[in-house]
Image (cartoon, rainbow, N blue to C red; front, side, top):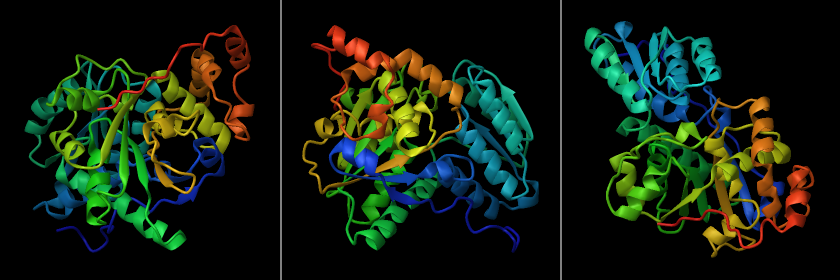
Length: 373
């Protein structure tokens, strides 16, 4: 068992705040669950932290534990952050596509070793398990999303939302919005809602980007599928195959699956920065994007102005001011499709290109990507 000084948890309770700007844009009450304030910068601190703490406390020789995580970035960062809090080393294996910024952040967080190998997360993961874990008897494998302890850790998010909303409103949310990569967050949210007996009354909008939509494609086909690769800019959603648990829960719960474009994910990033001064990566930007230009009402038409919707601001560290500016340069044309969102700050700060495209009639007959299961 761990020492008496072992922390009781390796994540923090995050604020739940109502956003006037996003509420005005969406036409209902929008609450932001600020997981970007976790120790690692993303919700990954919950699930990864729970798994690491459980493994440490139940290891026969905790003082010899060495954690190993395969990750595209955020899970590895959460692993290193949690391991460091326990005074234990952590090795992270990332694919060669991982950006230098994330590599620097993982190393700066205190990784004992960082290895780049493989074109995809799956290849990096195979290398970790077959080449590294087998050589270390004290090694503990930390998957990025597919583990019961990770789902349990992520379920604390829904418990917090329940406690916070009861304190503020005395009621429950009508819907929750979260993005899906491998499905660890979705599993946690659904399990947490089930324990609150909210599974039938709270809709869950599970969002992916085109090119990283393994859950949506699986639901459409009726069985798990493996994407040939990840082509989306939302690389943190880059699991070519969603967890079996997520696939099962997405079918049996009150879940609506939808797919947005990279342009919409990027737009969500810069508009959140303009409206709430919060920077998130594209994997989180899709959660925010649905609030603008009528998207949320189209996906969940039953919502009313009094409806309460919780958006999981899952965070992510793979974002910089330079990246936001590049997104705006490349995808600014999407603002030509705006419905106006009158009175919303980010409408007024929209790229100048908006008026040019809008006046040219470019948006005529065009629709944003909406793929329901």
